[in-house]
Length: 105
View 1 (cartoon, rainbow, N blue to C red):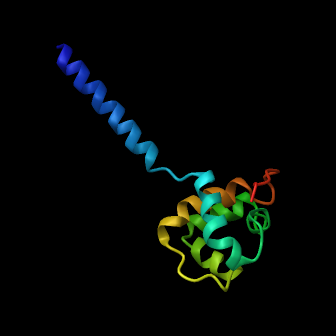
View 2: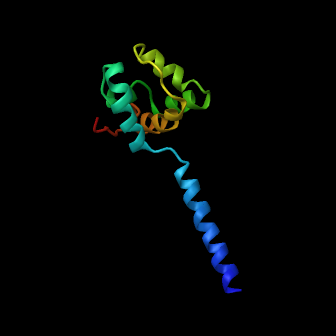
């Protein structure tokens, strides 16, 4: 019985950790913006995120048009990887024009 409880607890912890790792991250999105987009966009993270409200960023993401919008705002940007989109979305939504938050980049 003790082994079964330990096995179940271990499986629960492993599942919880893997689900957390799969989520996007605002800080990671900020880092990606700073390293990959800031120069090509020629603007700060606050200016970029301030292009839309939080709900507008959410609508763009849900419609699958976030990458297209980033390319529209930053026409000099080359080769934006799809794997960056969830983190960039979290960053842009967190610091949208109506959020009152200001990023450090």
